[in-house]
Image (tube, rainbow, N blue to C red; front, top):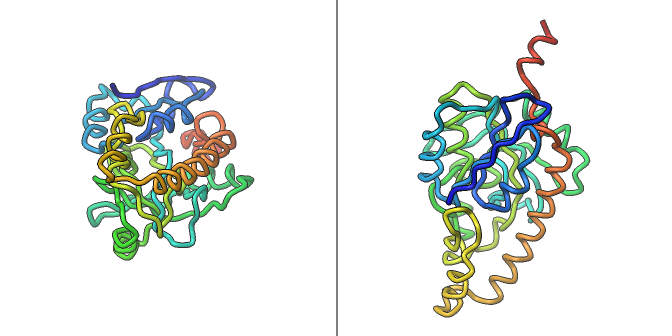
Length: 246
C-alpha cells in the first residue's frame, strides 16, 4: 500500500507535493497546503506512482525526509537545504528563490543547517567507503533515494523543485544492509524482517542501537524543521512573487 494523502489549505487548491520514502516522513510532512506521496524507499515504485497521476496537481515539488550523510562534517540531525540533486552524472538545480525562502524559515533550527547538493541513488549507500566515493563523484552533502525522482517529475512538468533532508547515518557510519531493506511497500518498518536479520546475524544489536539513536536525532530535527516550515512547507507561491515584482 502506497502512502498518498492530499490536503489543501490557505494556499489554495494546488498544494506542494511532498515526496517521501518512509511513512513516518509522510506523516510529518502532511498538513495544510501539502499533498504527500511515498513509495517505501523504492525509486522505481515512486516513479510509477508519480507518472500515474492524471495531472501534477501541485504548484511545487519538495523531497523531504531523512538522508545518509556524505559530508564528514555533518552529524545526525543536521539539515541540508538542497541547492540541487545529482544523479546519473546529471545535476538538477533546486529553484533558487525557494531555497532562499526555506533557509530563512529554518534559520532558527537548533541544529546545523547547510545549503548543499544532494545525491540521488537507486539503492541505499551502505558503507563509509561507498559514501566517500559518492561524495568525491558528486560533491553532495547527503544522499537519498527520492530526491532525484522528485526533481525529474518537477522538471517534466515545469514545476519548482526543492528538498529538505536531515542526516540520519553520518558519513563514517555503516548502514546494515538487512535493515536498509526492512521496509514495507507503504514505508512502514518491517519488524519481522529486522528480527529475521538478527537471527541470521546479518545485523547486530549494537548496530541497531546506533541506528536507533541516529534515527531518533534525525526525526526530532525533522519534526522541528516541519514546525518552522509551516503551511505549504514554507514554499512560496512564485506566481505571487512575480506579480509583486511586476
